[in-house]
Image (cartoon, rainbow, N blue to C red):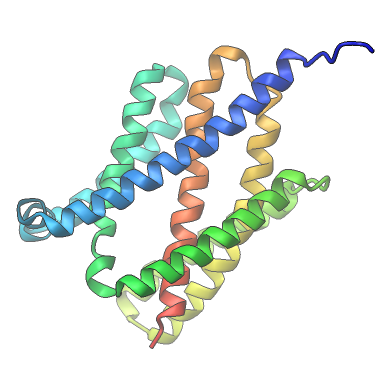
Length: 226
């Protein structure tokens, strides 16, 4: 019997994909723990919601951190990229703590379980499908731009009907993006050098983390419409 030989490329690819999901899970845990600590610690709660405009400052800080990490990741060290990724997870936990005041624990748990199941199915579909999802992903990205613009308009209109339409469309878009992004990350693994795996796995984790969180938020609004 001939020995089974596993190429270094396959080992690297498997390590990369494992790292992506590992970092994504860590970020979700950090975000959840941060939200819980925020609502249960008066000093932190006062910092986020008691100081005028601090909540909005934190939101802008999140956008800035994601933009900087995405645009400068190639020039960052592995340590810096890791710290920035975890810092974003913490910032997101601070701002997402608001949902613990708006929704019940049961509502949040139900939405999370449905999100986890949907995300898992679509991520598996994106990973195992042989069909190229590039064109599909482009459509989803255009849809994402559309719901961002619609959300900005509705910020001033404050229409409940429009809000729920945006939520339903948002779910469809992030369900599609989960499959597309998973395939993109899988394909990326075959093009990376060994020294690029760490930072690339963090960026892949950030992409899937954003898909998961946004899908969760849209589903939470839909499931608890009443």
